[in-house]
Length: 371
Ligand SMILES: Cc1cc2nc3c(=O)[nH]c(=O)nc-3n(C[C@H](O)[C@H](O)[C@H](O)COP(=O)(O)OP(=O)(O)OC[C@H]3O[C@@H](n4cnc5c(N)ncnc54)[C@H](O)[C@@H]3O)c2cc1C
Image 1 (cartoon, protein in one colour):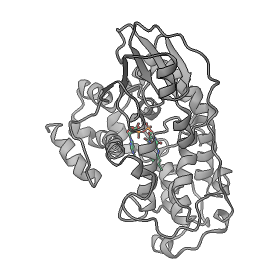
Image 2 (cartoon, protein in one colour):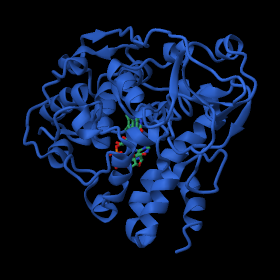
Image 3 (cartoon, protein in one colour):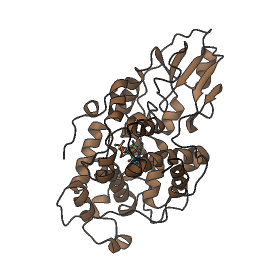
Image 4 (cartoon, helix red, strand yellow):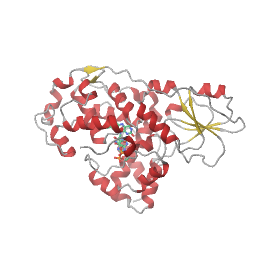
């Protein structure tokens, strides 16, 4: 099913259009349809992931429109999942890069099935989603779950390299949501592996396929050998095509505000006069590579910030090269080496720290909704 043509038609980068998208989201319809491939999902994640808008902003806008929280609970809960994964990253730091709760069982290799990379698994809904993914940088949540399940639980790949492949191409790339969701599917961040069979895929993707390697009952999955289609694998070498390093112009009498892949908020300190630098650190993108489309999206969306300049290099090099004295930045797990004035990010609820399960976290959040 072709839903959209390319990333620009689906993800405009003008700030006003982003706000308009929040304004036109349909939280009631969302709750009823979000699991279907054509459901009323918001397509807001690239803007949240790049720090253009926050989950708190979305919730406030939606509640200001008069929606009763109890009627749109699923919508709020999904936004809360995002904050939950973020909190886990803050607390667990680099530990999210390995199996977080349990070791992944039944692992045959650390690569990724070639048929996934080539959109050639033979499962039509999956292959269409992957083809569209390469054009748009977006995949529906249910399809992300299906793909992760096929790769890790049916194809027996270790979750990490496939997660990096998906992160690489996603415009909403967010390592917490990504790594921890892959781990949730693979059973390393949950108590059981997630499986979906062909019947489930047919239902939510409106396909009508039979006799595929997923056309089995659920009790068959745990003893299933790796299907032929998933046996050839590829070990990926992902690299980030960072723009070339150029000189920037700094006024030493002004403070410097640091923006990055996770903070492109156009209204942060909007009315102050300052140097504004989009810092692209090669070390970060070496560890968490992203594709050209993701770079282009980040740069296009950064244009909403007036006078922003791009610096490709490490934080310490920027500071010493331009003798920066007064630096401000927003808190994030990838920024812990920054020095200066750290400001907090927006969270939907005043619920912080480690919760072993989402529902323990959600129980606390829900109380703050007062209904
Ligand atoms: C294997 C896998 C990998 C994922 N990788 C990423 C990623 O790199 N970046 C990313 O932003 N999300 C990721 N997600 C979560 C989710 O799929 C996306 O946030 C969602 O599909 C984005 O589309 P949307 O904005 O239309 O979401 P909607 O369904 O409209 O949801 C609204 C918002 O709620 C939040 N949300 C919804 N579902 C989830 C979820 N399951 N987990 C966390 N937050 C959620 C997102 O911020 C989203 O923008 C991943 C999920 C899976 C299963």
